[in-house]
Length: 126
Image 1 (cartoon, rainbow, N blue to C red):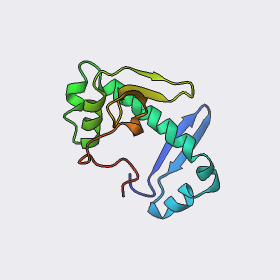
Image 2 (image 1 turned 135 degrees about the horizontal axis):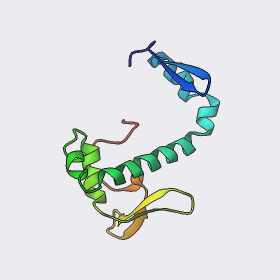
Image 3 (image 1 turned 90 degrees about the vertical axis):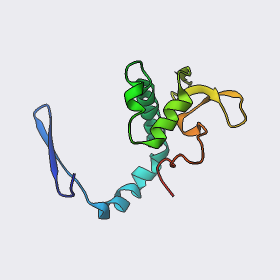
Image 4 (image 1 turned 180 degrees about the vertical axis):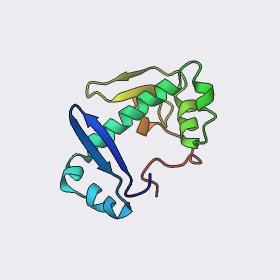
C-alpha cells in the first residue's frame, strides 16, 4: 500500500482508521523506547509464527505448491525441515528436531536452522 492510504476496521462500535506511514516514519517507530524494550519478544513471536506457517506449508497437498513459490529462503527451509518433528519448548518457542551444523540432532528454532550460504539472509539483510 502507498503511504497515506487508509484502512478502516471496526472493533465493536468503534471504527479504527489506520494510515500507512512512509519510510520517513520507520526510524521513529523502530527506535522508540517501547519498541526497543520489547524487540526481543516481538522477534521470538515472529519466529514462532513463521515456524507454524512453515509447518502448515509442509502439509500434504500444500508443500508442492509452496515449493513453487519464488522465495528461495522458504524453499530452503521447507527442504531443511521436511517432516521433522516439532514442538514448543518450556519457553513457548517452536523448535524442530534437526541436525545442527555439526550433524548432531537438536531441537532448533527456525532462526537456528543451518542453511546453505547461497540462501538469502533473513531480515535484516546486510
